[in-house]
Image (cartoon, rainbow, N blue to C red; front, side, top):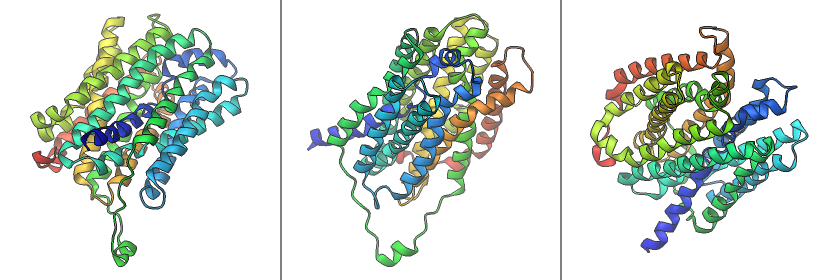
Length: 392
């Protein structure tokens, strides 16, 4: 029985392998921009941001119907097909920009379908183990991205379209998840209650949603723009950027494993302390001037953002009603994806400020300011996020 349960948990955790889907190609952004000289850099970056927008919309639609109108397994099957076809497709169809965007659209649908992973964890594991398994899930996601980044950097040296082969991981993860995943039991309500009951989302959850959006939108340029930043500083190429992004995601592995212990140690203070790390990391990236110092800044930023991303899902499981946890989990993930999509426009907006001559330093500076303001706000609001230590 325990062995069967273990396989079920592993099946759910494997869905996190695609949590970075659509962004695996980040180390090759500059290479892809060079391959399409007729398009602006922001247009080419749609290859990265479009799946995030599509996945956000897909998440909201799927989150509304999954578990009652449509089975979780059905959603995962659809997601796997879309992720594999759309993810690997541009390797075979790379002469038409429109067809490439169609493939990226399909990948976004796949990533959005896989967002049911958080709801599956909340419905499948005991409340006292929620932080542990959400942390483990994000470890899987971080580990996948860590491996993917240098692979993409290497593939970029072969051809710009070879980088899309990395999305083939969705086939392996999807098949295993479909075979071993257990369908959660449908919650049964009295008919009258079922018709009248409305999902209530508290102000606390909406606060987390808004903060997740700004935290992602302002920090994501660190990943999508790092190859361009290193190029402008004459410090590296796509391969170096790939290793640097691996270091960023590797920090997530360490952080997620330690998340339950950090919760017990810092309690509700963790929600503001974690914003200090990206602030510090951004200062190193901005003014380090050396590849080792910039790498350290990227690593520290990754630790902080990973805590934020995982902790917000844990808090959602604690503060949301059982009937709404699937929807609120999806909304938080959707806010993250919307932040990724708008990050390229955030970069363009920051350029108008002209604070720094090196273009990418402008969004990095605005990120520092944003995290400083959020940290102060969360320090003020920390009392609202107190929870019973037995549920953490």
